[in-house]
Every structure is written in structure tokens, then in C-alpha cells.
Image (cartoon, rainbow, N blue to C red; front, side, top):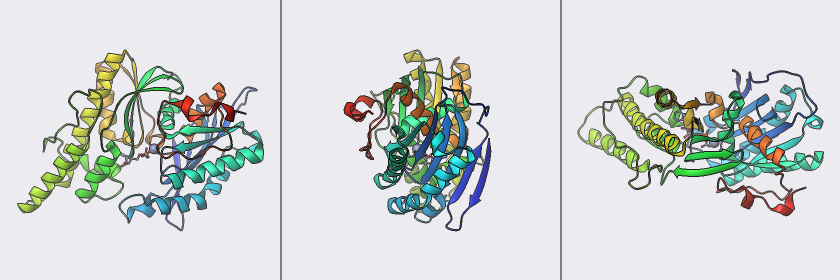
Length: 376
Ligand code: KG4
Ligand code: ZN
């Protein structure tokens, strides 16, 4: 996959990702979807054909703007989305060499996420759907992350197990069918990515923590410290990362009080090992218990090198097919929203123009999410 990057005057990084176009030929029943994502700090637009071919994938990342504050500032995120969204949509269409006339539907993430950020994408998608009279498809952000796996793995079909680990979510899901999710485990407190971000801040690596811990851990000893595993008694598939995070923070405070020098790399590697081990244990056990022969990972934390390596090894040892998106498709992007939207389009799951942003939208409850009389 080829990524062309350009840092704009305001510090926002504009990326165009290429390499999944497949053939340029179009067939009569092809479905081409313009997808939009703006739930957090990435403004993104993509054109996706038949759910699995990415004709264009544009990401405008605000990470650099939020770094000085140590995390995403919702107000700044919303304002930047407003500034960037039209440019992203234009770039996505132009890279796909298409115009709005060639699009069959407009898809957008409408939750969960930051409400002000989501509203920008939802308003943009509604405006385009209204002006072009094309169907509007609302997509759940996590459903998008899971569907990122379809893009590079043409053979992947439900049912399969999926571990979704991002900045806001840690879910273990059985994907029963397209759009049908059974959540069998989730975090009781912090999400996995959140734990990475908090520990990175505590050891002085800064934001965003996940990639920084990943890099530092490569130079550290994962067995330097034994941090507790994020398990919960009596809830086999749930996670709890706040205990692990507190244990790392306690160690740091103690080391400081005793005047010991903190080895960032060793702490990063040992913390990462504890997280990755529990994610992998739960996922493999779930595959066995639920009779799943395929396991996918998704979300920002799925780009973690140690997680990918351990999952690969454990899946091979347990005869489970392992799927993971390229790192750039693990973190937020609109191609994954276009992939998820395709299967909703086939089912006729379209929304009305009263679609709203839903910051705490639950996964796996599509019937409740759509109102029957909104279909057109
Ligand atoms: O999926 P995502 O881009 O946004 C959300 O939907 O939350 O995930 C962002 C999260 C952040 O917490 C970030 O630190 C984490 O994913 N992350 C990583 C890595 N890359 C991103 N965590 C561990 N290792 C990485 N390489
Ligand atoms: Zn995400």
C-alpha cells in the first residue's frame, strides 16, 4: 500500500492511500459508495466499490494539533473537521476519477464518537444525499473498524471472531453475519488504546501513546517487570485495564521516590506484554469456545506490532485463520466505513435525512438504530 503524505500549513497531515483499486473495469451491478468519517480527530473520505475495492482513501489527520494538549480537544477537532471535510470529499472523488453522479450511495459514521465531530460528517453526508437524491447510509464506527478486514481479505466472510481494540473501545465480538454482532466481552473501565495513551503520558513519551509505546518497547525488555494481567474474575471475556495502568503508575512513583532512574523502554515493553497477552488469551479462548476458525483484529491498537506477532503465532498454533488490516486501515479512515455500508446497502438499510449523530451508539442493535418509516 502506498501512502502519500503532505503536511499542510496548519499542521494537519493530508494522506492519500493507494494500492487496493483492483481492476478499473466496472460492471452493471457495481455499487460505488462515497464514505465519510469524522468521529474523532481524523477527517476522512473514501470511495469504495462493492465493499472491498478502495478507489480512493483520503485521511486528514489532526494528531499534530492535539499533541500539545496531550489528547484530543473536542472543540478543536470539530472546527478542523468543518475546514477540511469538503476538501477531503473532493479529493476522494477526484482520485477515484469519479463525480457525485457516479456514486450509488453516501455513507457516514454517525456514532459512537465526539458529538461535535460526528455532526460535521453527518451534516456533510446529509447535504450530499439531499442534493444528489442518493441513499444515505449511517454506519456504526466499530462496525467500520471490523469491516476494514474485508478490504484486503477478499475471502473473509462471517461468521468469525473479531477483537476490536481502539482508543475508545475494547470489544470481543462474534460477527454472526454482515451487520450482526454478538458482543461476548468488553472492557469494564479503560479501553486498551486509552491505557496505552495514559501509560505513555506517565512515562514521558507523550501523545499519541500507542505508536510511541510500540516503538519504545522494541528497545526494552518485556520481562523486566511483571505487571498484572487485565482479567476479571467470573467474566471470562471482559477486560479491565485500569488496574494494570495503576500498577504501572505505582511502579513509576515508587521508582521516583527511591531516586531510581526510569527505564522507559523496559516499562513500555513490560506494560505492552501484559496488555497483548490478555487480548490474545481472550480472543483465542473465544474462538475455541464459540467454534470460530477465523479471527480478525481491528481498531487503532490492532496496528500494534507485538499484538500482531503474538496473534499470528497463537492462531497458527491453534489452527485459526488470522486476519488483520494494514496498519493504515486499523486507525480511523473512511474506506472501512464504505466497506461496512456496502452490506447495509444490499439489505436496503438506508436512513432518512433526519439521521443524527449518536455519541454513545451501541453496537449490534441495528433494528433499534433505524426507524422503519425512515426508509426511502
Ligand atoms: O481506532 P482509532 O484510530 O480511534 C478510535 O476509534 O479510538 O484508535 C486510536 C487508538 C489510540 O489510543 C492509539 O494510541 C492506539 O489506537 N494505537 C496504538 C497503536 N497505534 C494506535 N496502540 C498500540 N500500538 C500501536 N501501534
Ligand atoms: Zn476508531
